[in-house]
Image (cartoon, rainbow, N blue to C red):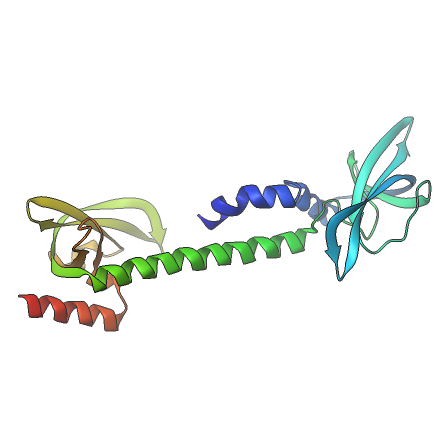
Length: 226
């Protein structure tokens, strides 16, 4: 989910799949030649307080002139300057100036950004979940949720099939659903204590999904109410 949320953003700032092209220079056969800088543009990025430049260049492959682009903050180049070029054998359209990056953001920096943003989104989602549970416990009523059915999923954990157990609980004349994932459905109880929100009964949480201290609190709350 986090990657789905940040994917379009990363695609734009990282130049789409271009960040992954730099990996090909590590694992595929590469040839070197020489070319000339045709243009240079200062980008909005910087590395260690040095601006990142976009260097456009051209180089000959047989009778054909190939054009390419590289990004770097390390070079001090000028237009029409002769430069070394490396390109993927069989696909010279994938080229770069040695020591530079094919994309605005080098692959490993791009990968680090992916993980940092994914972790940030995860923390936010986790925080929302904790807030949701806290509001249920603050404004909640404990009741019993009864077993309805268990269905096998396509997910396996340690070579054990994951099951989705459905429980139901009633508030007035309405029936609501709560779900539990487990690899041992035969050991699940026929009824479990759950807490639902008094203001929005559709919101609930099974006591066994909570940390031990909170689970004990919910169990005590149910025993007090019964």
